[in-house]
Every structure is written in structure tokens, then in C-alpha cells.
Length: 224
Image 1 (cartoon, rainbow, N blue to C red):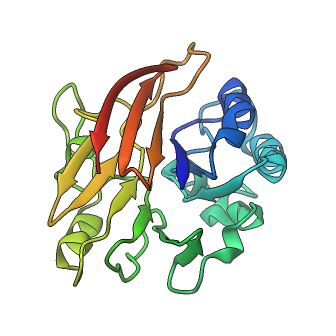
Image 2: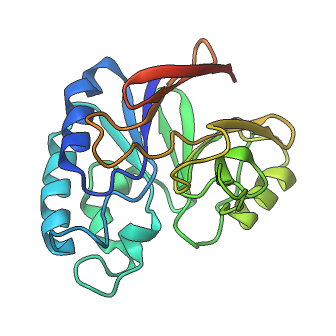
């Protein structure tokens, strides 16, 4: 399976368009939260309308999880992130938070919600990377903005999950890190506001390799 990982698109229309234009090169598109932007000139209701339309027109499977900008607002229809239930594939996740796709098990973590039971080989969708990892730590200042509960759940799982596909930290210390007994956390970071192309990560699950692209240029690769 080939995955395209983006996060923190924050209602930048050109970045959503870029994802659409490149989606057919992948089996699935992962958006690891913060599709919306509290601080944009457009109202949250307007953002919800066009992003929902974008998601429904995406030519590939969409996998996403909520970020803080997607749920931490009392303004309808964003309150509690209910708008995200209308996105394609949202209802394909089971009560346990899991979804099977092309032979892989994905598990979605809600923003500041209890962590679902994790299984060996799971691919976790989580806006905040696990605490204590490079993707959760800011490059400047070294502040850890990761999810402590997620880190604990990964380390206490009977068998290690495989990947955490995340975002939240716009300029992480590093885009990839290995934690626990063999779980890899990935975070593409956020491109500069004026960039034409968002930061993104591509994952080839068969080759167990990932590549990090900063504003359209490949910068690094890692074995998973």
C-alpha cells in the first residue's frame, strides 16, 4: 500500500487542491488533523462546507483524525467535531476505533479522547504524536507537545503498533522517530504559509520505507 500523509492543512485551499491533484498516485490519503483553521478569514462554517465537498470528491480513500482546530470550538457545526462524521470513510471505523483497509489495520485517535486498545501492527492516526518523540518536540525550544496517554498506550500494548501518522507540531525536531519496542512516529510538519505545496510524507508499506518532502522537495527517507 502507498500512503500520502499530510497534516495541519489549516484550510489553505491550494494545499487541499495539491492533495487532490496527487491523490491518484496513492492507495489512500491520510490527513492527520487540523483541516480547519480558527484564525482564517473564512468562517468555520464556510470551511466545513468546502472541505466536506473536497473530501467527497477525493479520488482515493480518505483516512483522517480530528485535530484541535477541528473540535475545540463551540461554533456550529464544528462543536465536538461532529462535522467530521460526514466525511467519507468516517463511519467505516468500528466502535473500537479500528478499520481494515487493503490488509492493514488503522486505528483513529480522537483529540483528547481515550486511546483505543492498540494491537500489534496497527497504523495509528493521531493528531498529536506520542510524547517523548522527536515528531512531538519543537525544533526551536525543545517543547514536547505530544500525547502522553498515546505514548503510554503504545509502550504498554501487548505487541507494538507499527506506525503513528501524526501532525500538530508544525516544526518538529525531526519528522520520524522510533519509540517503544518498534513503533515509528511520523510527522510531516507544516509548510510555510506562502508555500504552494504542503509538507508531506509518503509511505510504501510493502517496502517498509517512508520519505519526507518539505514544500515539494524530498529531504529525507527512513526504513520502518
